[in-house]
Length: 132
Length: 132
Length: 132
Length: 132
Image 1: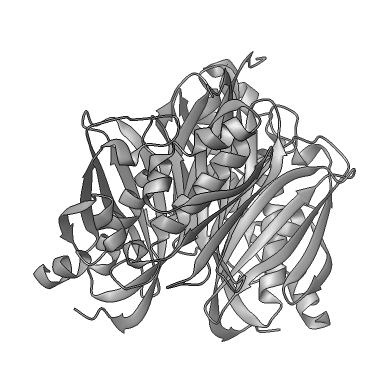
Image 2 (image 1 turned 90 degrees about the horizontal axis):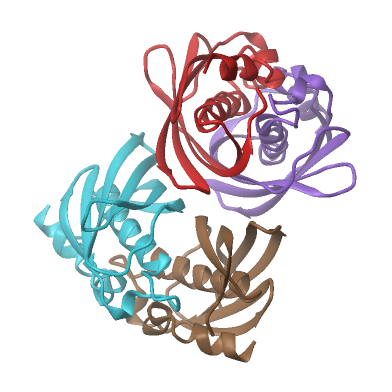
């Protein structure tokens, strides 16, 4: 798992946007970001693209942590509340997994644990091992 | 429309990630990004979060260009092919619009016009005008 | 609530397909169907359209039970396992609700409580009261 | 193709609800239903479950017509307008297909060609041939 966590540090898009993995095990992951000006949209609120990226990175960590390369094929996000600051946390939990497909539920919370968004993601599990 | 385009330059998350609006009118928008290292995930391919952000920004431009603050409430993305380089383009077209809700179809293409992803987005149209 | 339950019996598409409401309160509902031949697709398994209809009816019951006409605007279903017989149950729980929009998570189980499908639904809450 | 069309007549859930296939070829299908009382919900409008079932049946016809058993894994429907009567038509077109996954866009129209709903569906293509 330590090698896998090191591998995920190579996710430059996540890293460049300040997103960090805080927990990870097969079927579960948690990731966080501390909001600053670069995360806002033109209306001055946290960009939907950042919330999606945080949730998607968390999903990728959880689903790939079994060791097989797993590709997101579909993801649906719903937004419930807006945010402008603080630490935002995503948590990914596994809903279903067989030898081909896995489904995850990823919730995104603000620092007061208010639900900001939910992502449902589906991944295709390849037979290829992740090169750690 | 020029004022609105200037307003969208205030989208710091898009700007910080190299995303630029190239066309915009009520119900339609086009946005682009030129891929470099910061856009890649740990597997070395373009991050799903970047494709989503590009599509979402394009959607926001098209749906807000009528002048009312319009909030994305739900977005579903499907991925069809991966990419590692070049110019990536998103185009948003309007599927439906009434006085409360609008639906958009956003396609994301690589430089060879291969379809990389499709986003379906739904927005809630508020009665508030965008402060330009 | 008794009047509302009587009102839902007027859902002819649900009734004609053998779907019945078993529990209902604001923000929560449960519905069931006992599978027989008319619910199967050409491959002889329970039709995705039936699972969707069961989940959607359950969602409608939960979201409308507050008394305002609430219209489903978007629903995303994922399938995890197939089924061919027995009692199938859907349960709808509320994820989020403000004065305009409500989001629900609806899980569909077979008789052994295996998760067959998940529906995420979003509804627009009108100001109109349901005519009971 | 004639054998495959005969096979689809074995879809009892579609048949019992009055849904008929009108065109079908690899990657494309069209299906129709004529609305009557049994298709309505408690509010007296066409049930979302019927629109979904019509679209889903049309999707299944198009994606399975290549000859391999193809299973819907995810489907997202958005509703744009309501309907109470007449002939409703769904058309499924292929967006993407590789050797594992296929994505379809299914539009649902009323008799005046007004867009009622859109379904985006993703299927997993098995290596098994359909037993015709």
